[in-house]
Image (cartoon, rainbow, N blue to C red; front, side):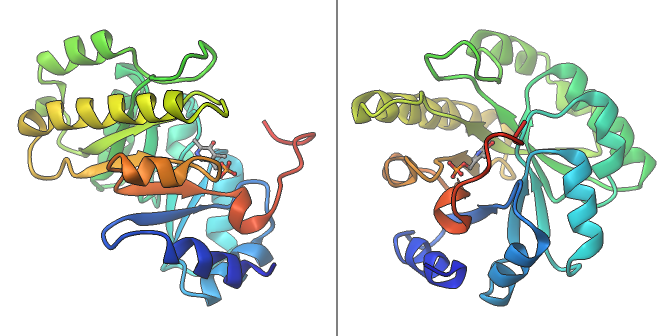
Length: 223
Ligand SMILES: *Cc1c(COP(=O)(O)O)cnc(C)c1O
């Protein structure tokens, strides 16, 4: 099915207030342009080089989201234009984003990635470490970083109960942090092609959908 048809179908399943990030990693600029023509403006990428190349090639009113693991030495490449970094998983990365944002005279929106899945391989903060770090009020000294919410990835399994458990954990932690992190803390990014309806049922405000919109990726070349 064409990208615009797929987009319309996914959008039709999302309640008002849930934002759709079209995950375009590994797909060519033409595919993004097709989604753009159908009205899509939020796109997610997971490699800084690819993100920069697409930013250069495509319309300037696209909001580019960095959703993949980000190395501190790559922050500078994307700092001038990135709209939201979903994958902030260390104090060092947050501090680097602060420095690079200050350098370009911007405030950069970020999400804190919380590890909830069973797989140890998945990235993100352990809750105890995140809570301990936040207790020291780190953002007081980061005027160029605005923490908008949490991001998470559920366990990769067909067992919907486990997926639901992971999303409910994310939702609970999100609610727990909200009073401390203020009004801007309003975004809960969870759910991908296989599990986004469960994520939405559990309170996602943003879903990251790739293969359902653009087709399968070539896993041979994917990071
Ligand atoms: C690739 C990716 C997605 C999209 O995955 P699909 O299964 O293609 O929808 C969402 N979130 C993150 C963090 C990703 O790396």
